[in-house]
Length: 191
Image 1 (cartoon, helix red, strand yellow):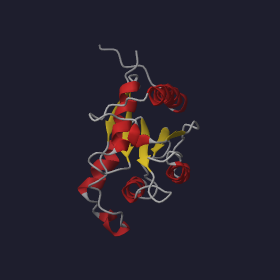
Image 2 (cartoon, rainbow, N blue to C red):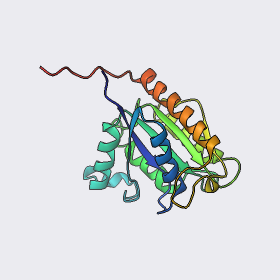
Image 3 (cartoon, rainbow, N blue to C red):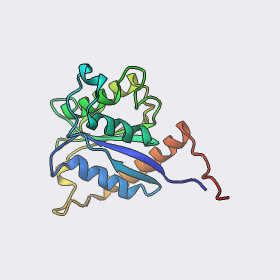
Image 4 (cartoon, one colour):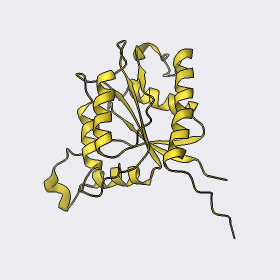
């Protein structure tokens, strides 16, 4: 028997009522074979290589959380046809120090969303460009969630059936992708 794989979830939006966070939570609920842990990025000081000799505690925490996960999921809005600055900063913080990137070889997936019809296409592809450079093997199936502000009720629950089914299938594909890239080891038997 294998244990559920842990997925670090990096949400690109810092807003309290973030649609990306709602989407991440809905995705986790629809993908019970994986264990999801949101890794906060809002408190990360801006990356500055001068700080690397005595890295801020927030950087250390973030790097440890990402390194401990079996895989990583990015759920992000689109800001000005790209990723939010806080998300880019988190990627940079995790990629350092040089030669010790926490992203290296970690299976990943990207879900982008926007209130418009194209679902964060620009942010999705800008993020993928950085992740390919950082050697994150990405699920090739793409996930763009358009008209995202209309998908949730007043309690933050996903109420759109087509999106629910899409996310459920995407979760199954992601779980299979993780096993393809980093097959799970059987849990150790108690002596």
